[in-house]
Image 1 (spheres, rainbow, N blue to C red):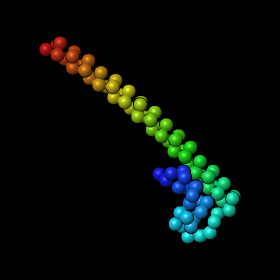
Image 2: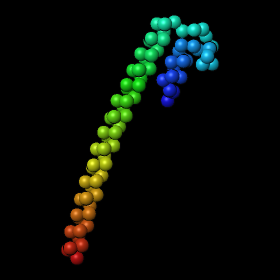
Image 3: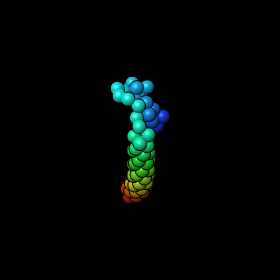
Image 4: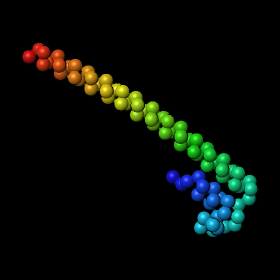
Length: 79
């Protein structure tokens, strides 16, 4: 992911960022910063969802592992 500083520099001064074109207007900069902020927010939300999903899967995996161990112990006791 591009850093916020790099993204803002690209909008504020396209020539300085190596992009053809003139200097952005204040409104363009504001709009681009809003868009970057929204993308950042969405990225954080997605990361949070993925962390929750991972946590849920790890809990289920632990439960299955514990159940398997209990089952194996029961089998050993029957032999």
